[in-house]
Image 1 (cartoon, rainbow, N blue to C red):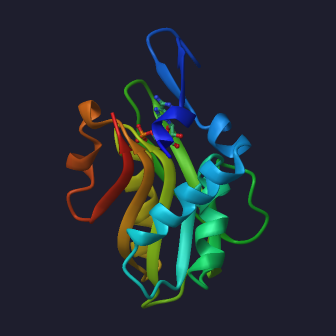
Image 2: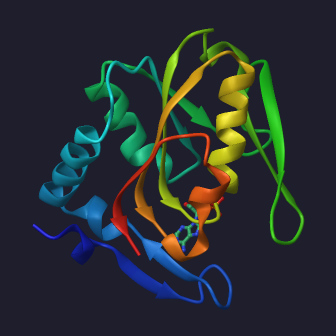
Length: 169
Ligand code: AMP
């Protein structure tokens, strides 16, 4: 099974000049979804205490990975979505800034943490997430992606962490 067949390119979404990698065909196909989960799991160094995934497309595979790794799942969300005490990190985009939030009690000191998202692009989102985890005393064991857009060099921003991606563009 070729997982690349289940990633759909959408031009100029969400804005002009962006080639959006749409994972909904992969989510629709049970066999493809299962294959992606198995292959993602094979990349992960165990044991893992927590899987941290970013809103919102990171949640699809993130919860599944957490369950399979017998690890807790931690959502990272956009501002104002999480109800309990939280920690925020604001990071630079090409134009402007963005902010991510995580519940403070989601990570305990010494936790071995897997970070997961669907796409590694410039790496800003993953880096901001890793910084939150580390500020709470967790160790980022791996940043794990379904896809890496290699031409954007997101790896450079994440040079402190092991990076794995299933599909490369
Ligand atoms: P970045 O912080 O630049 O690495 O961007 C990563 C976040 O943006 C991820 O949560 C992705 O879901 C999303 N993203 C960035 N570029 C794309 C793309 N070309 N197609 C789909 N999602 C993308």
